[in-house]
Length: 83
Image 1: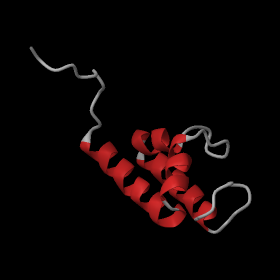
Image 2 (image 1 turned 135 degrees about the vertical axis):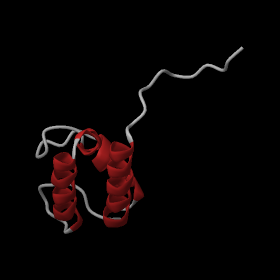
Image 3 (image 1 turned 90 degrees about the horizontal axis):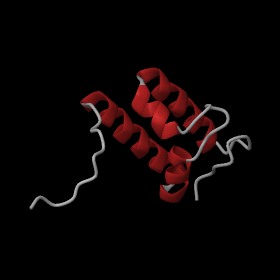
């Protein structure tokens, strides 16, 4: 009998690379906990969850990395600061 495995689609290599690289950048700039929250929570400025935007396209990655830059500089709009 095969072990139960959730049927989730795999990311294509480009999407997986964007996700990994941007998540690493977020962790460096914001710290682990804030990066996880930033990437997974809805972001009004971006119009969605950063992780979804990054996976979707290079344009999404650029938008998220721009917002990360603002966040890491302590921009009050972002609500995230490195701890």
